[in-house]
Length: 292
Image 1 (cartoon, rainbow, N blue to C red):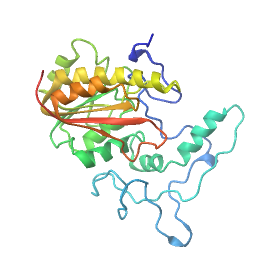
Image 2: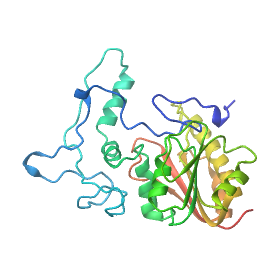
Image 3: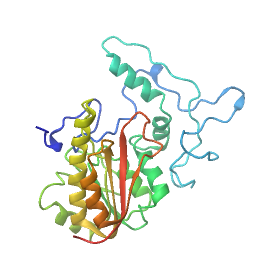
Image 4: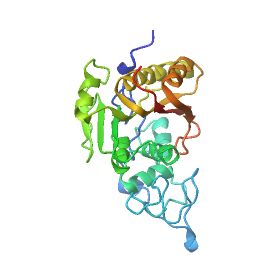
């Protein structure tokens, strides 16, 4: 029997909330000698490398819309691989995870720009392409911990941003956080009262902890995405948008059919910030036709 999606346990070192949103902390605690350099230029003063998957921007990092007031910083990304020394009590899996974090340019950029996780760049890149975060809009972030997506919505000009999570979330300036279950019967009405109307965007980066069994992981995340979609259909304003994470697996036809009946455009997207080895995709639906 597949467990209820909200019963998934938190993965290691994650601020999970709804069924384990797959947002990793930027860096674990470590001694100063293991702290990665935040700014290391190549020998000879050569231009540091850009973050992969995005056009080169002079003295800009991806996802910033190339504006000085959108947390743009110089691309001072590391040019050498950082190898973490083995430590007693650290498992090989922990060692691999730490090495991956230390050598991930998106992790470095997130630290430099003040985003709470590298997953913020996924939303930045998708919004750069589809422009679903509109100035003055009302946004609901399901499974908001640790708050990176809410940060982006505020930075991109949303007038009202509300995050919902089962876990406590550190305050996000410009956003409101509800510690609760978005599946509660009164939550749509409660959120509409807080928003002052229907939402223009409902977004979900929720995901269950992975088991390593692709079919099981796919079914679990599809259950989460379907619950998020059901919620969105109750609270979205006409012409609103919905974003949710899914895993590749092929059993999402029913959900996609429902989305196509209720939205003008439905697309699958894998943003550059999504790791190549990950099976995650994002489904983006725009042009909500109105409450069914």
